[in-house]
Amino acid sequence: FPARHPDAPRLWPSFYAVVLDEDQVTIDAISFAPRHKKRPSTVRPLVHACREGERWRSKPVSLTVTGANGRVELDELVATLKRHSEDRWNLLGERNVRLVEGASLKGYTEFLHALPGARLTVEGTSRVISSPSSLRLDLALDGSTTYCLEGGLCRTQAEGCRAYGPGTAFEWVGLLVRYGARRARLVLQADEGLEFFASVTDLSTGRERPWRLERLGGEGGEAGEAGEAGEAVAELSECLARTLLRIYWPLC
Image (cartoon, rainbow, N blue to C red; front, side, top):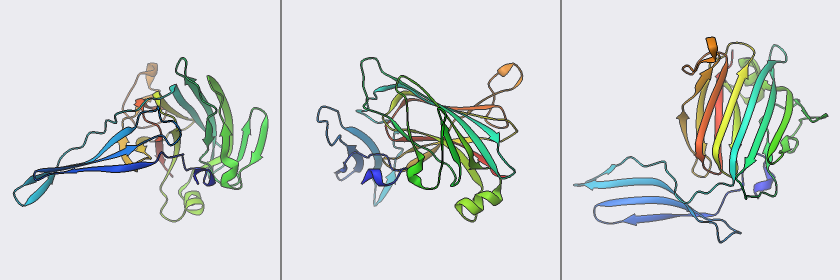
């Protein structure tokens, strides 16, 4: 029941293909569209191991997925952090979705990551987020959707522990690319110094890995290494459907 939890993207049915002989074994995850037979299946390599005497040695597995075809040219979130209080941030968001020429989508729904009690304002309307069902946001296609989450994210470690549980040390902003995109882009700006780092997660397999982060905002706006304040940019070309791109920062 994918619609019952706001953070659960609609997953394609899948099975594992295991090829085993005397010398090697490979395991691939093959996903297929449940309602559109003309869409090609996607193949994700998971395991490759070769036999050496009485042992199996694992081999590097390519992260390249075959059969992916996105209908979205650009899927982008430009987010800005503004201080709301001592313990919380406001998040100003601009979501840009541009379709591939000739492609179509019935709609694109965003589910926002935010703290209970945050106030969401979209195009002059507002509501208080008190449950996961309040996080739904319908995006404009071939256009921009702007919103503000007042008090939506943690700013301090104490607030993180209160909101998420003991041991919470980081907060994050994420871009969930539901339909795949030729170009996925997450931009995060802050009005005070923060240290950023990024990751990308394939939600079909649960595989998360660090991702390169470009930082803008030095003198002349030149690019630099990921780090302190300014504008942090995480970008992914030929992004697969159901990919989560996140930028984190440590809580003070």
